Image 1 (spheres, one colour):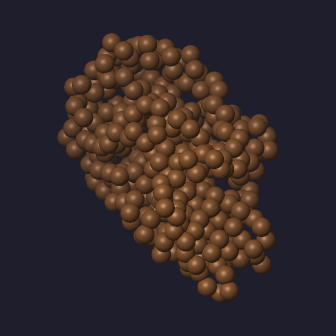
Image 2: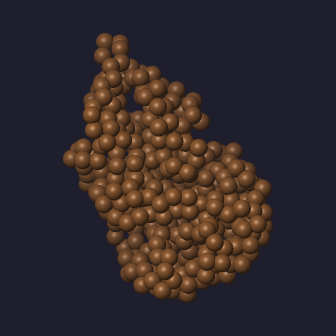
Length: 370
């Protein structure tokens, strides 16, 4: 059986077209880890993962250290064995584990990556304008590009958030739906006050009002809300999905590949959401085009609403060759789509690199200057 011989690890820096504002941080660039793997039969694979400071307890330095620790243990092993051993350490660094495991799944040509028919996956887009007078023009532009689902970030000031939502609702009319996202910024009372005051017109859901670990606060907001709630950050396992299903008015769960460990686990999680009577939502708006491709492949058979794997639209440049295609508000993949890495782009955006080689029963680590 083929065994892993080489694993390359890089830090990348991808400048964004415009700042991406969340309640806890504004991003001017994405800084994913890129992993490339090869075995002694000539097969190769790649994946990446973006640790978002403030989104969880994970840190970028911690993820880098995790990979430096576990990559030598993977080399010389069969890919399936290396993947199983790696997933046993998932809780140590979810994002780093997922990047490594998915690179192995790409190497092994996982069936979910087979795009056997032309595929169109509708996407949502964020509403960026904070000046109320600028909102109608932005909405008109997004509608002209084909978007029919908008993400509205809230969580800073209840009255200002409600006023902005009302302006967006008026600008949208019946032409699109809204997903409101607090990114855990409200406390219990704030979340309840905001959710109870919402006019539900065209609002699909309200996402993650309170802290990830405060299930009681999120349940209280769900009980007070005029619209369904969606949980996001705390959803990392099948048990988390089961717990969410027991909360009245939590009707959606959002899953992200980087929190589930592998393509297989992500698919199983999405199916579990539906089995428990909720609707799954998929996607990471902080992912590169590599992550968007992987999530899009899983989305083909698992979701029936607008995908949130729109991160590939935010950086100024792309990593895949051929590029992911965007048209009419959707990610489009032609039958047979199977990208490679754009080597020139990868080199251009690399800020640190480590190569690990398995030779003569030993692992050799090579560091390259940025």
